[in-house]
Image 1 (spheres, chains in turn brown, blue):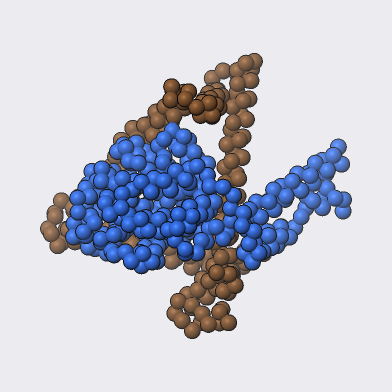
Image 2 (cartoon, helix red, strand yellow):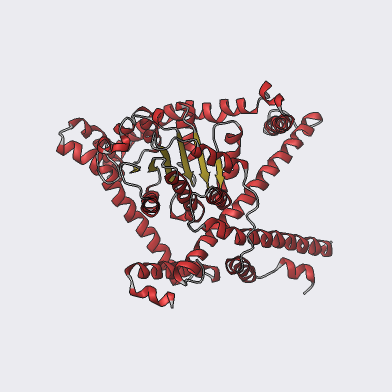
Length: 215
Length: 282
């Protein structure tokens, strides 16, 4: 029997461990219990341990230790010291030094992010909402783009709070609400699909890899 | 107990059991209800078709972790099969530290199917922290950002990386994204907008709805949304004869469809129950 044969190979034992941990997690459906807690804590511990190992081998060693001690790139002491400052939060007297690397990160991050986000999420999106002559070539493209244009304008009007929403302004705003609701509906539908997919992934593992009932 | 109250108070364990039956049965009795292939999935497929074989590499970023595996891993394997079947070189990287193993696993699984050789046909760059700094650095110089691959081999010693300096030598990039950092928060603003990189994405269904505006504006060339997107891509590569491998996403789509019908039914029953009890209270 497939499920018992697995116990004779190294790979199979890992499948058994995965299957049991999956069942431990599923047991939460009937309420909190020690098996669920064990699997949860194991997952958190493993993730952190895995991350530390990857950080060391993919970043800390090739980008800091090897160039600094192997190639004598003394300049790397500066970012290393800035990094160490993050750990100063554990020493009360030196805790203020954490502001130095945070200042660098926030300054660099904002400088890089603001123009990029403006370009990608505002300018390009406005361009994408405009009706151009190319769109007139096909009637269906024109209709879809008109629908999008109306949606953009009415939704923005809904979020305009500097004036009381009444009369024509309210009507436009209400059309915006319809668009927003359609957006929420689409997101909810996709979310249902995402959550069911996670369940299906586990079922394929349990029924296929573990029990061998499906291919 | 009246009907309205009974409908409004269905025990959650009954709901779980009902859903379990609904999703398990189609695995044994396939209904084959994939539906049609959506234009965004076809667009992504076409963009990979247009990448020249044995030339500049396709860039694949594994921006997800094991939690999103059922949705995004089938996309990763399907795109790799598509690329390798056409002799397109592939450069794989990742922005999620817990996704490194998945990228490596997929390459180890798919490359031997097509007899592909590491360094000549594909490269695994691995993971580096600093997300925005990494992709901005790649825009300037890929060898400076990744002096070595995931295994510590200098990039310039790998044959397929000769002449690959930055995004100018990458005809198409795909981010398989489960959130942040991913296509919407990083690849579109920092790579597509800044460097004009042709970009496609595969996303978890949760975030797929947010990606459509970028598709419409032309910032994205192709989109795979959740397990349905993965199934569409599997269908497209099988249709073209690029693979005869198992298709896990297509296999799961029957259960997916049945689960959706069950959830719609439960929503309707819940609302009917609510309306009946409200009427009675009045």
